[in-house]
Length: 329
Image 1 (spheres, one colour):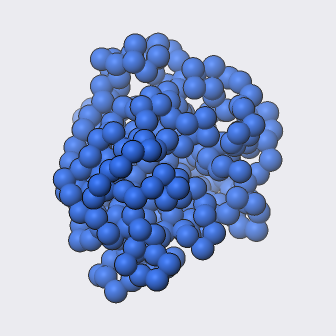
Image 2 (cartoon, rainbow, N blue to C red):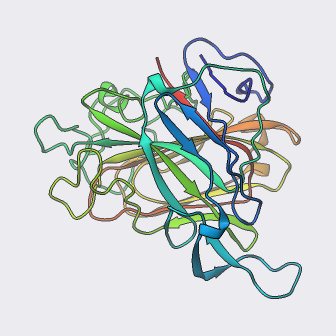
């Protein structure tokens, strides 16, 4: 089922509804924003650990090479990261606590929007490389130039990508193995919360890391490599569609973005850094969206082979809830 500390989740059509019992989408009640939008400091206990919103600006790190937009003229302001975040080329990240299904809160009915343009919550899962004992055969095993069509064009009823169960030689092994990428699997992966801060950047918000290794020395460790290269990233948000929005991803390896449950970007397979952009106004019929509606954006990423890890998002989408956790029971 869908669980929410802030209220009812959205159906795939953009209307408020109770979700089907097949899965739950849990909203962590965070007040999330960047310095440019107004920081919050709300905290909420989930299970045995506490999730914190952005730290106070007076303790923030400063990226002295980055300035905010200056539409109002005057002296440029320096962009500031919250305390404890690792700065990257644009924005920053913070690895959170280990995440377990038992830590998800029970639902309430208190609304749906946390207006979180600046900070996005996700889940990362660490895996053992495939050439290690008990390693996952899809990680540190293959190499290539990418392959579209690994997943179905529609998101599954559990808000996870659906594997196309045909051979994908040199890219993946089996459906059962793929289904572990974005689901907690005991002794197979180790899940963590991850916080991504996007930075104002000439009319869009950007997260740009050309060395994206949040799990270095965590989980199963670096496994004799210079970084931890075997992990996945899962992000679920909702957004207002007002017209004029776009979403661009640049990076490696696998990347799938779904808008309102429909595949919008397919950069699947092992590959060097690649880019793709979806412009929502050109795809309204495909996605079943209309101006004024609120819809889901779901992102699934995998880093599966050394020796590079690029991860960049550029978007002007107005996220209204980016503290969603999807957990399959």
